[in-house]
Image (cartoon, rainbow, N blue to C red; front, side, top):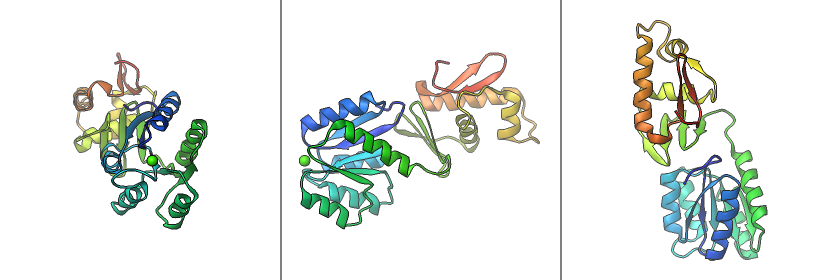
Length: 227
Ligand code: CA
């Protein structure tokens, strides 16, 4: 499940801690996926691209430190908030220069953990708008990749430019003529009907969560309200 603030993956094998974290993170607007072992959590981060990973050090199979090591080795930069149970785990987390973004030590208050997640996200937020998120749709502008509800969607170059242009201006009503001029270019011989065709193709690929609203008689706006 992905909600307004994005998906957080929780890797934790203690069901009581897991359900508390799910409750507090969900209440705060995050989508939450939980995994009780390290290998499943590692796979989830690589495929579902969460905004953050809450990672218990003491996990069965791959422990949390190994999960983080493999993530970083693969080039993944998902912010990691470690959960440690003992001082020696803290030492391992801090000593190995794993690229951990923060840690909490058990027992911790769920409220504190959620606050730490927010702090990590603020610190690690890209300085530019390379990553656009609206509803369940995420756009990596630099990498020209798109995900809808966590699954990658393949758009043509033009479809991608159109979606990114709309998503950079959430809530703003954009006339077909403006979209043509900005996305297709001023020299384009395309008519305004071309815009409708491409919007329909983008919507079809993104599915029911496509964050593009038709404004009758005018054009389109990027937002998460119904079409
Ligand atoms: Ca554990």
